[in-house]
Length: 417
Image (cartoon, rainbow, N blue to C red):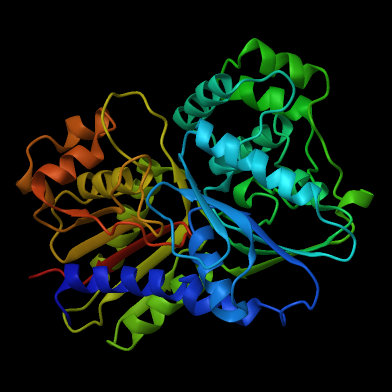
């Protein structure tokens, strides 16, 4: 059996590697069109995707928007950087330039859209009279509310001039192929980056109800816009009739790659699902219970067991600390396991950013609580990153240039007798 924590990090690195656009995107590309080709896109992986496109096609015309620090060298495609998870003016200005570029395309042109997680913040075009500052405040409130990402994206679509299919509508009547990396539970193309190339089946009334349910008071302009009907764009409308949406990379592929590596070491892999949602600490409690129950039934000679899961957990922020759903999961898991021998775990976001911190996540083992005396207090303050930073068990990758969401692995070996 390999050393547990380095091995868990190896599994995470393998999951990220499989989702790297330079490895995976070329298989999804059609032959380069003979006419005009325009490349647009947004997301944490979009610059790497653009780099992969030009590796196959050569220099291309276009513009993609990625997170600060995630730019890649491209030959012709412009790479703009903007803020995530809260949008900024750079993203808004770049989005305007992208819409203007699409406005200049015609029926004989081909538009290749490169979409990945993070695009919801990076594609920034408020509808109606809504201001950038109001969108920023609403985004902060939604992220702190604990609402699932699908709910947040449903609200975003209704108050945006680019989400919910409106990016594709701007390119009509050009033909568009949207290639996507999924970072959302269930792999719904309409949820990835709030579906800029996918029509919206929701409505403004539902968005208002979601705001009320999650205790978020929107700015007056947002409420007024929603009460007036929002900005729906039917999936069946003519302006989306020339769009093809393809998810070419998803969380399940990365989890399976990690599972294959684990099985090669004689480990019994149990998949808990690639689309888990819920409050991070509650999911941690459930998985800790499952791990302890499995360990209780193991004989001393039993093969190690690995619990793998993906998806997107949430955190309802009530404290003033620095944390993210993966670090909070790891800290809550450590508290629930309470130093149980033979159980180690890793929880990281495959994009290298957990919450708003430049940290992918954290690792835990039987000695985690002994390393820091303030684990329970840190969890209460939503300060999981602070806790793991103090004990040296953060996972810091820097930009991974991809995004297939959370990766969680719990390695269980027989308890010492």
